[in-house]
Image (cartoon, rainbow, N blue to C red; front, side, top):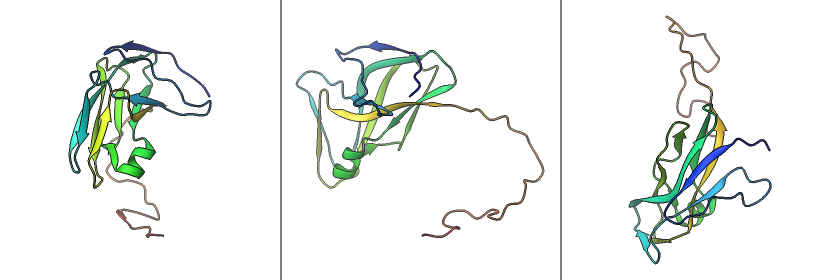
Amino acid sequence: MASIPVKIKLSRGMSAPTYATEGSAAVDLRAALDEGQTVTILPGERYIFPTGISIAPERTDVVAIVAARSGLGVRHGIVPANGIGGIDADYRGEVHVCLRNNGSEPFTVARGDRIAQLMFLPVLTAAFLEVEELDETARGAGGFGSTGVK
């Protein structure tokens, strides 16, 4: 896998994230709560967790994506409140993760718990060209569900 240099500033006593396996596409983000602190997210509620890291990719054509950890989502209904988060290459503040409890039971997070994933993806920017009409396609303007369920 290719890599890009990313400067990282650590705070709140946290360590730099690492890739769990050689084939991992993302690193785990951990809750940087105070020592001994826990946060319980009740069903339907959300909470913003600090991670104790700030990042600065050395390239501007990348975005850092904050995504759900599949086990938390599938087993407990714990997912990022905004679905997916994008951290622009020029953002220098601490990375935070807002989790929402879509499950039916309270979920407790402690310091150091893995709460989300962070991956880096290339970015293409659009050069918008205003036109009077768009090219025709077989789908046309068919929207939600227009291609069928199965």
